[in-house]
Image 1 (cartoon, helix red, strand yellow):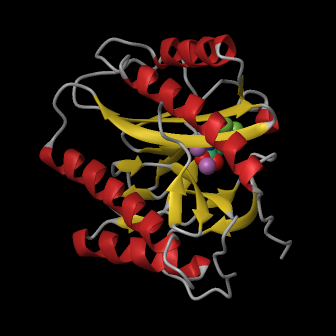
Image 2 (cartoon, helix red, strand yellow):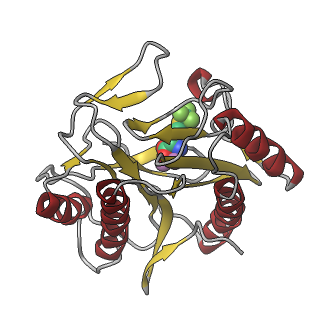
Image 3 (cartoon, rainbow, N blue to C red):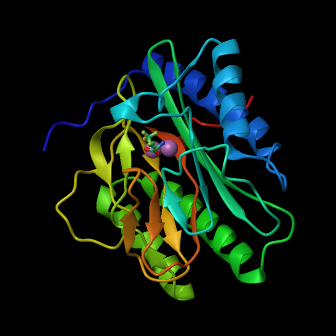
Amino acid sequence: MAKIKVKTPKEIELIRDAGALAAVTLLRAGEMVKPGVATIEIDDFIGEFTKKNGGISACLGYHGYPRNACISINDVVCHGIPSKDIILKDGDIVNIDITTILSGYHGDTSAMFVVGKPSKDALELVQVTKECLDRGIEVAGTPGVRYSDIGCAIQEIADDYGFGVVEDYCGHGIGRNFHEEPTVFHFRNNFKSARIETGHVFTVEPMINAGKPGVKVLNDKWTAVTKDGSLSAQWEHTIAITKNGAEILTLPR
Ligand code: MF3
Ligand code: CO
Ligand code: CO
């Protein structure tokens, strides 16, 4: 297990700057979520807005990824590739995941948006997944806890609703690198994990399925969908551990 980097206050400030741009971009992108809009239109906006504000879309070219951001609809768990052929329609639940590089540091955040009027069940999934994120962050900021405590707390909430916690994709340390140590599991586990310490910066990004946790990746090598066809939701923040607990670095300003 490679070592988890402890970031300086200066580095955390730079990640907060990148995170704020990612968050503002995400809000603006979310305003475009309407019936009839192609996901590539939203992606194009994300790319242009990021550049205009001095940033770089981290996803573009990352391990060959072809677009600026990921836009994942309904049963798509994550890494949905924006396309002119994917058109939003009434009732869809949509995750937009944006990672922005500014001055060499990364900010990574995603949120759910809905098109028109989704079903009650879909809205419940979206809200419970947000609760999972909030609880994960709260636990992360509690003195003395380990990384494994985050997943235990998240799965406790998901279990109450009979929802599945995705195991194939995880949160991650972040900074100069998009993905660095540690891996943050969102499911209940007793893996031997590190203690969460002041100066650690990482994401919490639970993916919760209305059905079973299983996922499969489509032939495009990116798009991950639920195996059972159930809906999936995700929310993500980049956080820093400070002496006052967890601070969210991906807030708009
Ligand atoms: N933003 C995703 C994350 O939260 C990663 C997307 S990688 C990409 O870690 F290549 F698909 F863009
Ligand atoms: Co992300
Ligand atoms: Co992430």
